[in-house]
Image 1 (tube, rainbow, N blue to C red):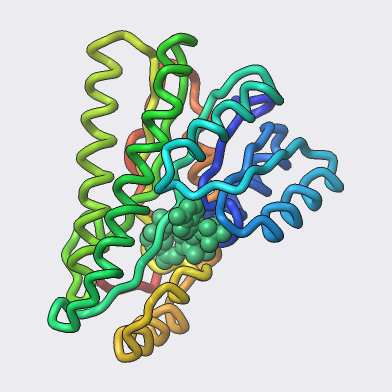
Image 2 (spheres, rainbow, N blue to C red):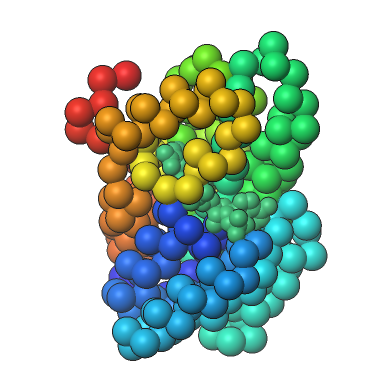
Length: 247
Ligand code: NDP
């Protein structure tokens, strides 16, 4: 059941997060949007409201615990509860390790790993008190397989897989009724490649995305499907990519 659910979405200012926000709101969810680019969040929230949906937003840097705490509070203050958090914010400044782009390595760990931890730390007390909740996270096919130029990015996405699986197990063991779902997208046409500063890596990946990339709406559909399951059912993992993608 999606209608009336209160859904926090990180990385909602473009790509998968934006598509998911629009889709869930059109199905009656009450969405709470977070990312760093305020103008984009405002535009998306206004478009949702113009279509009869319910949306609020807050600027959020997932690397800052206090921002994560504030967006959970915003959801509670505005809509009275939190049903789902979609931990989707991420960056992918890929490069060969030999390029030693250590600032990019740090940024990926900060956003893709610590951002997920911060989001869970912010929402878990609410879910434990409610004895219900749904944590959905965007990993990647790079969290299932190794790719050259993606050692650090892949590592952050493998982390998400492990973390989400343990969260699922512990929630079941503790009887807290917290559901989990982890999404493993392949080539999805978004703004993600803009985070790549290594020119050769960017050119290679751009070719792949030009050839194979599909719409972020495909991921939004899967997130909606996971949320729509009965409360006693977790659909835990989804790998979603272009039908013609051979790797
Ligand atoms: P986009 O670049 O379009 O979206 C990324 C989102 O993350 C933006 O909304 C961006 O907003 C936000 N973000 C980045 N850094 C931060 C931060 N520090 N704090 C808060 N928000 C942040 O790319 P996608 O939609 O593709 O990416 C969404 C997720 O999907 C990522 O986790 C990515 O790794 C994953 N993914 C994507 C694939 C693809 O092919 N596109 C494949 C596999 C996984 P802002 O800049 O406004 O902060």
